[in-house]
Image (cartoon, rainbow, N blue to C red; front, top):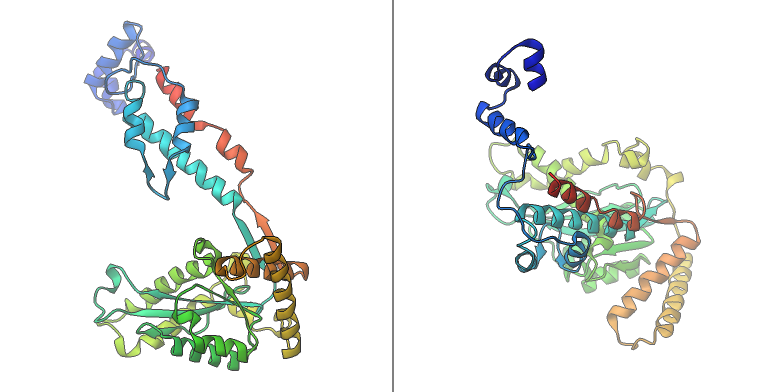
Length: 364
């Protein structure tokens, strides 16, 4: 401003109008500049104590972090309130939580399925939210999809699908299509009903249950539930009233829309293009399925024995079963397993961008 005034011989008030700066704010900055003080200072009372930001960051890392909240931040800030403001402390917590989330993603194992019809996944979801306020009753979708192609079979829409309905739907799909070798599912009672187990035994389908403590195991299916809800909402928006009598048809149309949407991970193809060509599918006869089941069962028993786990430990049995199934799939080239996607986790957690920024602020 001073240089512009001397060069163009224009008053400060006019320059402030042209620069969209408050004249009173400029005068405050100008007084600080002439006094040799920082032109811009952080608001609030000045902190009188120094603080080791690296050590504070270590204390924040030790807190309990959720996706959007961190427990214990109030007590921790009170212990350091004489040295760091709430604003700076909040920024530091946000950065640490972001870095920990990156670290978690880097440590997460990602499985890529290489053949269609190898693994199906099934799950239930309730239609919730403001867009569904006009529905006369609670409404659910029961979905089954192929893991490799993301092809979604026609959902069952309406009331919550009981075990018999889940079994009937699975039996119909396995009759109309070659049955998969594996079926991923959560631990809900209707998905593990006796009649569902009988249908799986009838078609020689090997179960892969998600661990109760790790819902991300079936994360791809959870992600597809959100997509089918959005697609169904777009279809229902055209209706003046809730299409209770024709919800099944609307759900089928929504699944059809998703199945014909090009996907980057399929190299621009859509799910329908990848699932139905016979050369993309894998099929197994009953003898092969029995041999694969026995191999996985034997490997699982050996792993369980090496763990010194109790024979009746259901959680250990499920864990070793998943490990054995993964070992069989990987050994025969049906899956690939990778970790991370944005550099190394150690780089993410040790780079300390927040500490640098806070030091810069304190130097102002």
